[in-house]
Image 1: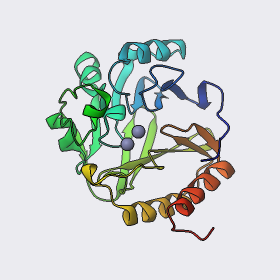
Image 2 (image 1 turned 90 degrees about the horizontal axis):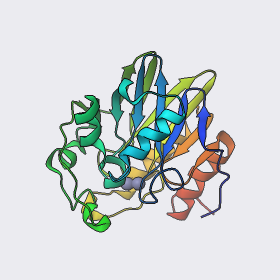
Image 3 (image 1 turned 180 degrees about the vertical axis):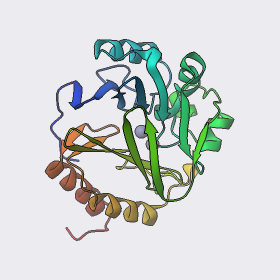
Length: 235
Ligand SMILES: [Zn+2]
Ligand SMILES: [Zn+2]
């Protein structure tokens, strides 16, 4: 995989901050984003669970008050994205949003489907307050509107999230790159359709779940390269 430019830590677009992930919290965490929604704060994914305190500290250094946390938008069922959910819901009363097809894994603390066993941790079960249904919709948090799109393939209930902020349009594609396993219900042809769907979106910034933050041009190239690697696009 090509090495992509990573933007500086902190604010990746107006009101959007990188607060977790390798180099920010724990190397096992996905990239965790916090969004300033005026009086409220939203988190997109929450890491594997060991680094919730460091996520709070990173929020504070971005001048975001953890006490203002209102929403946790979860992109899919893997431990590196959902591990901190129970903590944030118990500590701050955040409303947890997740697609209905992936939600049971978090609600049941499924160590196999979440891949928690591979990280040597357990997944604390957590109530999913809002189960997203269908192919897409909107989630309002404070002064922001998050548009979610069902992008199955990596897992059955994977979603991508779009946020318009100050002229930028940020696409949180999280685990667009895969990997794939029958254990989690991966489906490669659904995945290819999902990536094609993302290629049609009018994003200006692509925030990936592990590989960094890309400009539109880099992001398009990245998504097309993924299709190519799996034989869905001619070399
Ligand atoms: Zn991941
Ligand atoms: Zn994943």
